Image (cartoon, rainbow over all chains, first blue to last red; front, side):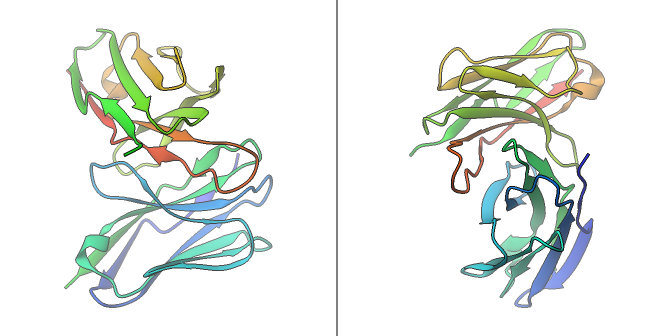
Length: 109
Length: 115
């Protein structure tokens, strides 16, 4: 099977920057997604990378290195509402998503 | 607004009593998914429909069934819920065309409690 690894929990300060890393197995890779999930709610799409490099979307950016099987989500100017679980998901050659267990991000004032 | 709708948002059922969860979409997406998500865990894919083609994950228990009568609707039937089936059930859709990101759009989920 394919494993998605990401830290279980991270803590950061309001206004700061945080980077959430994700590693995946490269066999059958067909894209890398990041989703945000607030407690008790459904995941919402944040970003998609299929080529190497950085994709920027406002305060959020996502990076991919296919040769290393590595991605990160960068959150800038952190706000309290950014407290959530961030899910990394790899899409395989069958267009199915293989999900990580998520990184719970705690923002402190 | 185009969206994915799940009903009910909260469902309580008794041990062993069949229950049906529903999902509808106005996005006209060709693929619909059912996921089970337990607390602090990743969503677990149960099955998906690619148009009318049903695809069951190998480890999805027989207790879980699904129906997709048309493009817009998809149902999850749990024939004999056990205590271990208490979870959030997420419906998602996507338009898979072979190009582009084909992101999955999630409904708000149905939280199932089994008593």
